[in-house]
Length: 508
Image 1: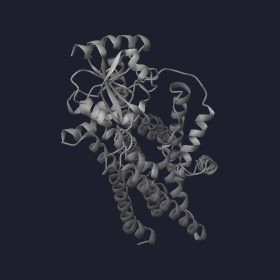
Image 2: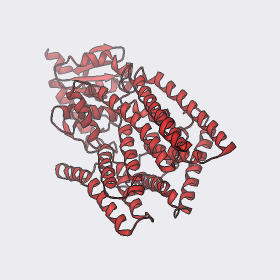
Image 3: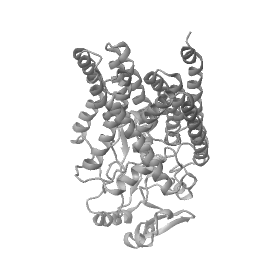
Image 4: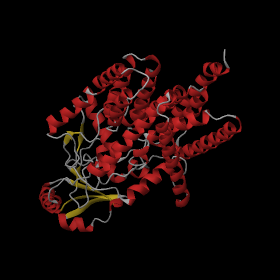
């Protein structure tokens, strides 16, 4: 047996398994304290998961305390969380377990993809380990967010399709199509894969045009129906395909800085000096562009066919983000979450390049991998110490809030300066009509009221009849609101107050 075959047969499976185990344990360790971090998006996922568990479908509570169809986010993630709720798990716990196993699967799949692309077991070992300990990937897996499962599904589709180069046939396009369809139901970013993979199939020079066309048609025929059906459902039930409104504006310098910050934090802590992070961002972006140029210039080389796949997918995703910023969502910043789908692709390319080195260059590359892996592991462990106390709405200030606990005992309708902590507890609280209040079920943060001042006048009349206002001190001073709505303090706590209408209180 050749040495390389022995390496693949013995050492590589052990490294891949160890990397997946480390990935799993890192995420579980981050969530074993207060549970996963919960962002405003996470509240919507948890609320929708409860409705799924009740058999109501992808519904969530809006700013008016009513349930409505969730169209800003695809339904797969809350549906799986809802299934966990049917098994007796809290939705947040189900999300943590789902993300932990997804991150472990991602490490395994990225390792296999790097091995299949390069034909070198070293590349698989390097890529699997770097993904397992990647601080950004660990961080987002430790929140109630959709990235981990999406990346596992999308990477699995790439791995399945790379096998088509060797085997041909229709089974690989079918498998990749199924995975991409599910990825589109996890995040709309999957549409980039929906375009990129048939494009790559059609461009393969080593196959006949008939075989390439058949594979592309089979893939599209399997991948398209599910996301297309979801779009039709949105159009029928809401008379629109999306919640976004069209715009036309070029990216700003803020978008450029956000992109640089996001790329730099793949390697550097966020607290690093700005000039150092800027230099790292330029280095990362330069390496990615150099790799793209290298693959394009040697596109006729069949050995680089998997590299062309990575390039086309990365390019389509970057184009999707650019189109969203320019035409659909002016406020969207290419923050770390947005550029995270490029990280597994970049790490596969990096591992592939390092595995091709020989002699002293190989040892220099090995030292680089050790430094990257060690630094990433240290940063991930540091993140775990922060996450264990809870972040976002799972942090102590919300989890142990006496104001929120007292609000749960109030009999009438609840109006809150921030209704999401109450919605997280299963209470359909209403948002106060204040300037700057946004509707979390809308991607652009549109106001829930056509006229905020008129909505406040109507609320004053309602509160004169009954109801309770929940005000958290972290949301600012409340004296002006009390005067405008004619409120009096029902109970005061360290972190906020419960307020009721003066007339309603007088009648009691």
